Length: 182
Image 1 (spheres, rainbow, N blue to C red):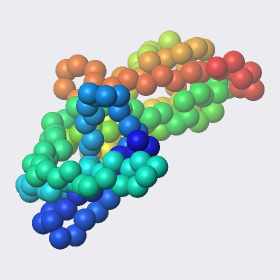
Image 2: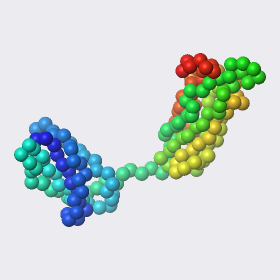
Image 3: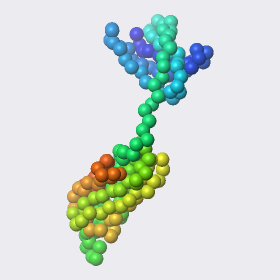
Image 4: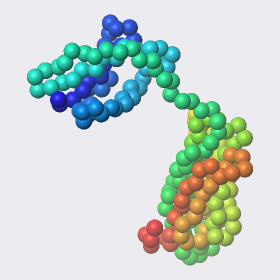
């Protein structure tokens, strides 16, 4: 056998190819196939066809209930993006030790954070923090001060909070301007 094809239909009259190149399994093997885009409240008819060098087999049919994708409405900041992830520090003058730019922070959550999302970082010279504002569906953004705050060289953990415990973390690497050490 070369491959399997899996077709799906809501009513048995209009068939859609859900999987067209599932590799063969060892004898007695089983495999779970996930098909997206189906209504979670319906049952679908499924056909499985074995494709061999001699052609396609007669379809094996079954009626399969769908399982709705899990949804979550809980606030749980789960990912963080820092821009830039590597920041340069001014080497001389009145601004020595500050960053050449502020750091943009974007945090996402599977649900709305009604109490807001806050980020904190230890700069090596103190703690900086900022409240993020909702910038999309379950997405929060803001700016950590870089150009007004002195930062030590090296790696700094950035923590996102919504409630009492940190929920997402990111890493900001601070290097001397033009050094390229991160």
